[in-house]
Length: 215
Length: 215
DNA sequence: TAGATTGTTAATCGATTAACAATC
DNA sequence: TAGATTGTTAATCGATTAACAATC
Image (cartoon, rainbow over the protein chains, first blue to last red):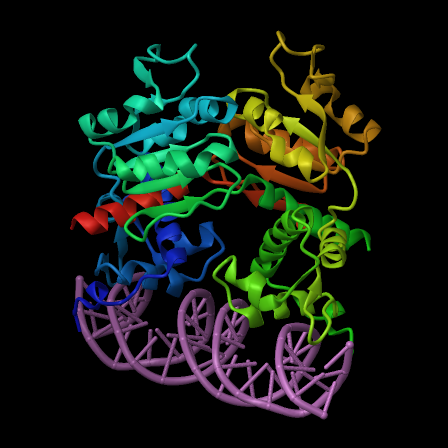
């Protein structure tokens, strides 16, 4: 029964993350000249259950062909569309310290259509300059630049004590989603999508298992 | 009934992560001079359920006092011990490019007792030098340095094509846990704890919600 | 003692997986 | 048609939450 229940159901966050992973795999498969793939084969690559792969996809539509599997190129295109990876997103990078610079040069972002359109940093030695043709502006000019460049996503990589203030300015300037690397819990309104990346917590879970092993 | 069921039960990964979060909060509370806190108060700070806080703690023991709550200093110390944060861990940082440098200078790691004891990079311009008194060695000398410095944790921040090879060398040298920032799925034996940090996937989930909002 | 809050059990909720009719 | 694999329903599993006796 081909019904579009995928409009109504709430989609688990983990399903979205897996979609991301499938997409990258499909991209590789396409480059390798693979034409079709079954849910079973796809699942094996990530030690998942084939039913989970099919269910993740079923949230969004019917992309497969019974007896065949999925056409790699077609499914990749569908997933890219669903994830918003079929277009370019203008991103503002806030903070050009060590982490900010690393993120600026990180190749993975650009590959999926995320283009850093403006860098924001209040260091007088940096304001007014460019980095790889991307302008560096002070927070004073932040709102103007964000609007002018239709930036919707901000990557926050400033010291923790500056993060909340700068985020409020970003939201006031019209930013719709924030990826936060500052080790602080940010408070934003519900109209803004916030994702925290906590670098310390990952090390701490590792040390838990090491410490446990030693006990 | 004070039984140590916490020795047998399998502990959810998410519970460990929350323990990390509680610990940091308790640290702050201690600095602020707060003596006791209830599961309810603690839960509210993270929009969690108080039963969840109590259950997370109950995996490891009985730390609270009925009618009172938890003594901040005592609970903090217990959780630090459980997470292995009551001691110093020697860490090897592999790859000193943009991301590696950022991670090297990242203050959050050192704060919780993770000390970068050696940097590994094969750039001839870097080998043999030091960065903030930490030696930089080539992968040729990796095994020797890791053993000499009793390093158990490695942070991998090399280009994706080098990640698998270097990880195998790390494991051969006796590394017990790997935090991987390279955008590649690493394959390691089951005796090694592996945690992947995928920077792209976070942006991709954000763009999913933005794209959905626009549909 | 009366009030507060824990630790734990039982109920609920949600996500994963097995099973299978539909169908290419 | 026979074989393969989907999309979906129903069963299972695990994690979250409500409820409450125990007890400070």
